[in-house]
Length: 611
Picture (cartoon, rainbow, N blue to C red):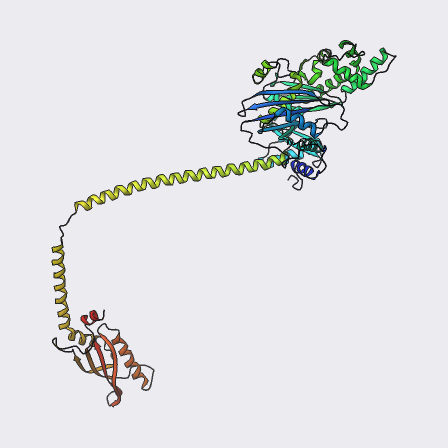
């Protein structure tokens, strides 16, 4: 697993900026709350690239309406103030950027950090599952580059799968940059009031140009040479990808020292300083003159003075090429691009080309007439393309998804990718749910159509079946049913006595003997009823001792009670009550219980009258 307790580079930069309460310049604009400027990269906006060198600042503006449709809008090259001992300040940055972009609100700002201490390597790892890829890359790079993740920004780019000696491997470009350099640059622009959207290094700028087919040889192996004031950098690009980069000690200062030695030998009367020699060298490189009395040496003499340093530079370049050929035996470096003003020094470029037997070209994408620069070239024919090319390559980082951004390391990108996968999963889930809901809606519509068809058929059947029914027929049928009911009611009343006797016989248990049954069926029809229930049965009977283990007279009481409950459950009898009971002895049966039981009798008319 990757170390989880490490703070990401972006978080460290944000913490550094929040904790830095001391402004570099009291007149600097107020700091914005968010040190990283983010807008919709797909929308209509401009992208500005800022390339700050020792004494110069280059700004490039690119306009776009889409990620693939962009063109150069404006560029500027200006000299930085030389009387500021503290170096470039946020106030200076604010002034240059504000004057360049004007009142534009929708913009994305990119800047360089020095690549002096940057390290780039290509590593090969075995093919592994996606979830193990980051881990494998991290530990392989850790072993090959020996970086300290606490002080170094670490990121990588997967270039693709290759086959080496019949074994499949994955090629990865890993790069590291000191976090302090990134923090300083981010802090500088944030305090200037113009937070950055991205940070890169010059080598990645050339990689962007190659991948965008803005430089010739994008499909071949080419090299670039950057000659700076305190160091030089040789980089090799293979099929548009930065393969490795190497720092060389020979630089402008080395050449200036060699020039001083040469001029002091020729002019022994007055010794010249290194600063004067460097300015003289830069003036002659740019083919300009300020009328200085001591500036009377032509380019050939200047080159002769710096030749010892140039020879050392060529040897370092040659060794770099030899090292590359030892790693990639089938690859040949076809051409060498020289960055910046040094590409104007014809004697230098010719000497390098002759010694290395390689085609040397200035790094200039504006000159050849690339479609994105045609309109600007027409209105600005004297634009110095070799000075702004790196800034152009920096700016188009905003339009290449694979372009490195030193504000986000591999851990930040993993979190972004995770969020992207989660959002994609949510979108897919919602899409599937929408499809299912649509299918369910279609099914409901189809089912509703089927139901409507069935209802229509049933309505047609119902309309075809039309019995002739009117009010008179209904009244006649009601009268007939009433007469039938009254007839059945009279029959029930006629046979109520027989039904009563039958019910008594059916509910009579073995241990009870009915001695006498008297029925009182109430008054005659023309007489007034005495009560709601005026019919009754008077039963005289004998309770014999049941065959059970119970002894004493309680068994008679229990038997008689069960009998009364049985009669009460009958739909005919109501309110059973004992009027008389006595114990007697019969020789044949022994002791028995004689009782007189009164029962109310209810007919159908009695039930209706209660309702």
